[in-house]
Image (tube, rainbow, N blue to C red):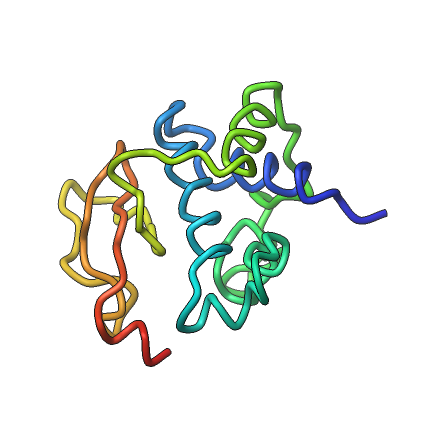
Length: 148
């Protein structure tokens, strides 16, 4: 039986940012919602008018949606998560359209495993650094993103 959107959101929040504290988890959830509500570029085509599931399930976007990474079994995935009430609370907060200053327009994030964020992410320059929250760097779209 497939997960509800709320369940899937709670699981991906836990998987992608469970160790990042409340602000880090809310920031990742906000990026997902930014992708679900943007009205131009790649994510607008993916979200098809606001479909959060389409955004989460878009191939190649979230390591936690992959059962295999680099040819190896990925045990840190949404299917192995056990969300707590906090993860559901953050999922509800995001799905209700709440915002988090500092990631208000961010469409991309990643953990560089380094104290410094790269200026552009993903490669190709479609996102430019906007903020860092804990270990994750957050990126807003550049003009190049509109052509994706």
